[in-house]
Length: 125
Image (cartoon, rainbow, N blue to C red):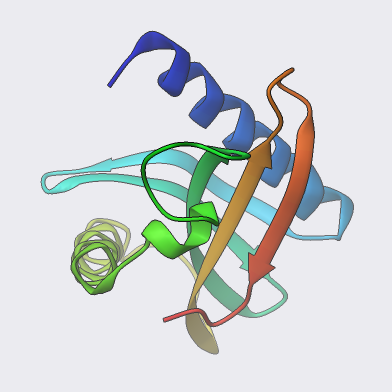
């Protein structure tokens, strides 16, 4: 992964975090490391614990899906579920959650690096 793509991903995660907080969500952890990899965002939406996968992309990119969120395929969904299970096992001391949900956020940037689109799908998988 190039440095430019890493930077774009960090900017997308920061934007997603800011929007979630502005909507009243509590960020539990960002870039949560487990033995299997990393979860982008773990947040609380009321009494629901939400594991959020964030994808970033560029308008008119020659490779990849048209919308960044489409890159969260079945393989990635399985990986995020596995990461979430490992995270929950390591955080048994947290309070009870009424529900657990998996959301997906896609951020599209234009050629100048400005946000062209922001898509948040609740209960994406």
